[in-house]
Length: 429
Image (cartoon, rainbow, N blue to C red; front, side, top):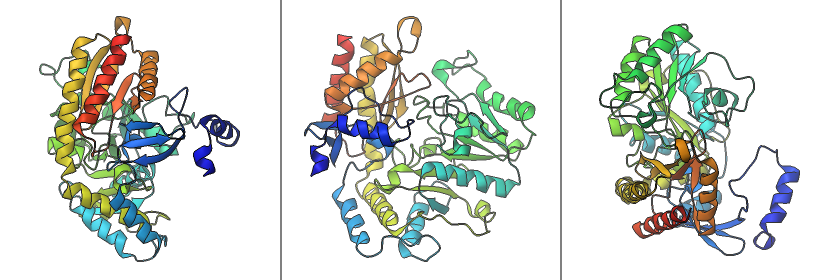
């Protein structure tokens, strides 16, 4: 009861006193969230917000989905935790279910407690399989908050470690609207792919273990590659015996209109990492690979909380509901609906520089005079949307991309209301 009666200011004061200062929140006047119901969050004053960010792509089924909640509560009453060194059925059932939805020949999984841990594990697996220890990654990518994860990250605001791990080479991502090579898609020679080849030759030993990629750069500003990119990249990496690791922590489990984003290009990576949405709000991470690559990891390995019974049951329930209710197709359809509304806004207002994304992962880039990133304006719009009852994200190297990643259960009326409110706020600017 005391939590419900607390106000945001008193909680902020505790936060300042007891948490590490790096912990931050989006808003100047942050609401204190106390409850979640479906697509809505409710603050301590009783005000309701349409959550269009899903806890950063976590709540695919919304908040407190009754079937997921019931499964978690039932499991907690029987067996809450054992660690992976003991045999439990839910863990292997989850591995089997995940193998049924992973692309191509990916069928072996290792479960852990976060996406950051999953990327660490994928890097280890790539090292074990290839016998190498160098990596490539995209500029403006984000791969976690661990030591190695930060070093693989190409965004300065999240790469806070002043002494990153060596042996990592950053290459330009494929961003056709803002090509770093000054080219135009359709007439270019895929200089972005050639840059990877040149980087391997000039900045590595010539034998990198793997390249980390996000199929769509999330925190990098919702950047979608052209369809030819990954097949061409594969040709380059194969020349050097370099694996491709797809970080689908944000894009996986239906977010982009496919179960995994790489399926948009009929592309099967060597290793996939995931987490977030699969856990239904419980902490989860995993990396998955083929039988062949999996056989390289045979020495004892474990994760204290990886695939614990509660999380495993929650994840099994999430997968069952997503498949039963055809939420992947729904994500594609509603994503097209939202995209059309956002593109209409872009046509009317010069402030909107670009709209991009796939499925229910869409970004609206805001630029000011001289096409300079409008970071302050983005913050203003974000705050105004919050005051109007809509929660969005902000991404991009300059933090000027308004980001939509709503629960897959959102409906057209809710998306229309959000787009109409966004247009009103931009018009008033």
